[in-house]
Length: 320
Image (cartoon, rainbow, N blue to C red; front, side, top):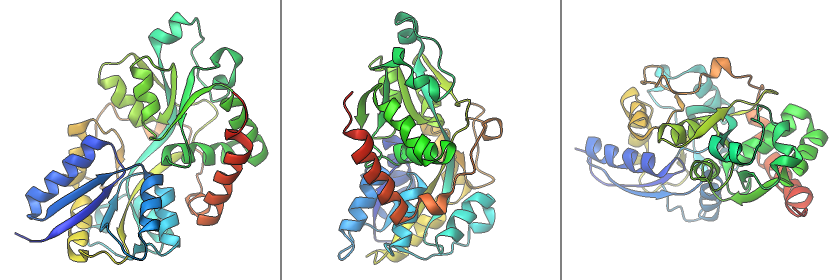
């Protein structure tokens, strides 16, 4: 059995993070210290710790902040012997970042709504992004803050690519008028919808499926205009104190066995290992109208910073 420790930064759902940490401990004998934060928060932590890295590996969360970290030299180049088992989109993610990150799962953006709340408020069933900006949905929509949440940044970048920048920001302003809260975590809005605290939550569709599978009255919508998607990613932190352990985790986390653990915690993403088990309940990416999301551009440090500043200045300060 291998020895040593691993400082594991995780940006997926809490129970999945815990399962990955404990399962790797059992298979390797390496002790894992896990910290769970959203992808935007984890990027900020890795950046803040650049001169004295505390983490060894960062697993999960949307790919954009992983790409930004790669561009800024915060993560380590590594080519895993497991790469030949992965879908082409996972390898393309790695190649676009100089092999400083890699795709571990994929998931489409959309929203879910609480059927009971929709009915009690006499609201029409939303099918499109545009529906969420209608006056009758004022106070009924929740999404995360794109500064802290990779999910919400994907939503912002999606609108810019789907409608063009001017029209995309116009959409975000009109949506803002109907938003009741910007959460820190990307999955929080659909949990709130499930519990009846908001009618609509803008999230990745796999999170909406998980809420529905848990028994909440949630319906899932892939918006009619088309939508963006994420490539959840994994990166080794540059200057990691436990580099051998980090590479061992990286290789293990790309295996079909490790990726199939997702089903134990109702994580319904499309996994990057071609042999990983998948659920019939997972959103079928082939049936969703996906945009040609430009991961390189919208994962770049400059573009990400520019869009977030514009959102802060032009959208978030508007009255609601």
